[in-house]
Length: 528
Image 1 (cartoon, rainbow, N blue to C red):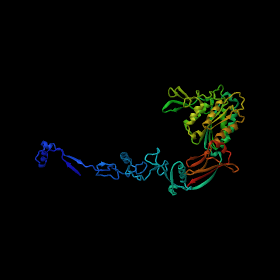
Image 2: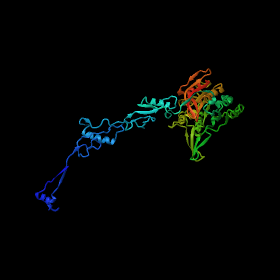
Image 3: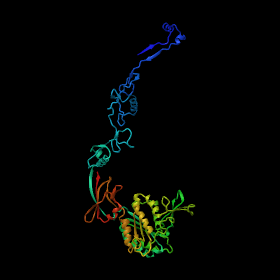
Image 4: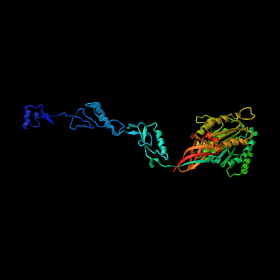
């Protein structure tokens, strides 16, 4: 309600009003200024209060609220919370000795989980805004005879370091396929199970005068190995190169876009022999004899560069691409150390010509990424760019004068750089072997170092199962000829998939050991 009060009127002015005999232009009328004053009605005026008084016009600090002000609950509203918080700062958190805000207003806590399989999974970063804390909620199958049991075990492991709960549901939805077959498979240890179905062997032969005492015995040994090459049951290409022809062959790197850029390659082979399981010993021996008989010592040649040709061989493989299931081996046979030691300045990798098919203008030797021109570091950079499969497919064999074990009559070292190179290969897990060029039995040495070292035991994998789903390998044993079993540590083998075929691939430490056993026993489970 309101009361009208009239202030500042003279008697004449009041009469003027009462009798309506005044015009609006009358000075007395113009002085009349009615003032209307509202009564003050106190009460709660906050729009989110439970006791909002819409008829009140003056806030008296009596508001009470039934809203959740704690972030992390479903009932929390940031806008409302900020508004109420401002009110509490003005009038205090209590009213008549009781909390203004209902302490039971926050009912539904919001929990998150970092595990992607949780029902309440929330992507990071963590902790996410708007959640109270982490409390994971899972549904999983705990029946160990089903595929989903592995997920259950994974969740249990996760909950060792995170808070949460698992609701068990052994329906098909969470259990998945049943484990229906537990199998024990015996796999014969046989060279035909090798990881590679073909091999490309590049023999880099020293044709300097100092090889006079060894070259004939080496030729004979290679011919003697013809039956062994055939017995491997693989497709094997044997290529032979002269060291003296180190800089005789180049290829254009990018004929379309840069026809002036060339790279050095291995020289043209003096001969090639192809061997497979159907080859005849007499024919292979005949072909080897013909090629090796044409190989002669070059008078005056003394710049033995086995490592330079090794670099070019690997560069050729990389440039042309690794063929599937193919083993590549660079084989250097020399009785002298690398002529320029561990220096690549005289081993060009590429050059530019002043015009297509023109004269060389800019020659670039092999070097590492920092520009260091050493065989060891440049080769390391090359192999570091390979995939694990490519690295395993390549190998280097050096047959040279080994100062550490040689029975040669030399009074000085003729293989220090090769030994340094071999140590580098060992550091970077590049398959390699070294042999003594002064050996009295070249056939046995080449068999031990090449056949057993690369074509037989290196990177063996053993096929054991074909199925459209990956099996779960429970244990792998090596079984000797007396039936005794040796359990293989799970870290020492890998399961390799090739389409629907699954094989055991042993780590390097088992390469030589596996060949001494009769068979491999694989215990595995696969799903329906």
